[in-house]
Structure formats: C-alpha cells, structure tokens
Amino acid sequence: MRYMLLINNDEAALANTPVEKAQQMSAAYAAYTEALKKSGAWLAGERLRPTQATTSVRIADGKTNVIDGPYADTKEQLAGFYMIEAADIDTAIDWAARCPAASTGTVELRPIWEMADYMPKK
Image (cartoon, one colour):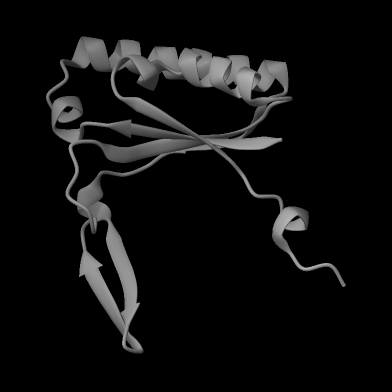
C-alpha cells in the first residue's frame, strides 16, 4: 500500500535555526531518504518552499478566488512530503517515526486511495 508522510514544521523556528544545526538536519534527511531508497520503500519526496510562496485557489459561487499565501493560519506548516510503499500500517508508522521531522514537528501519515478502490466498476 502507498502512504504519504506529510511533514509539518514551524517555519519561524526553522528560519531561526543556526547554520550548523540546519546542516545536521539536512544530513539527517539525506540519510533518511537514502535508507528509504535502499529499502525499496521510497516512491517520491520533496521539500516545499515556505508558505510565503503559496497560492491558494478556491471556487465560490462559480468564481475563482486566488489568494497569496496559505489559506489556514496554523502553528505548523506543510514543509515537505515522502510517498512510500509499505506492506502495512505498522511498517509505515516505523518509517514515519524514523523521519527527522518526527522529532521537530509532526509527520502526518495517510494511506493513499488507490483508484481501483474508489472508481465505479464498469
């Protein structure tokens, strides 16, 4: 089954991280990514730009509304993601717990709907 690991961190705290600690974090993410790849669990993953670069789009009453910045004001922001393949939820939880973000923020783990699971049968 495929899972998304959604990495949420406090952007303000990250922006104020000393250079040496930021380099250590980068090394930890590189090692984590390499471990995912070596295991065959890694499907995709990327770091996201800060929320200042966000554009939110909503349709209301048939009109497209474009808003600069994130729609929700939250303590933590979506900072990146990994898409992994795992045999079961316990294996996915193990991978989420190993993610460096689990010790500095929150790793939200979500199973991905496979199209065959929700598309009407013909």
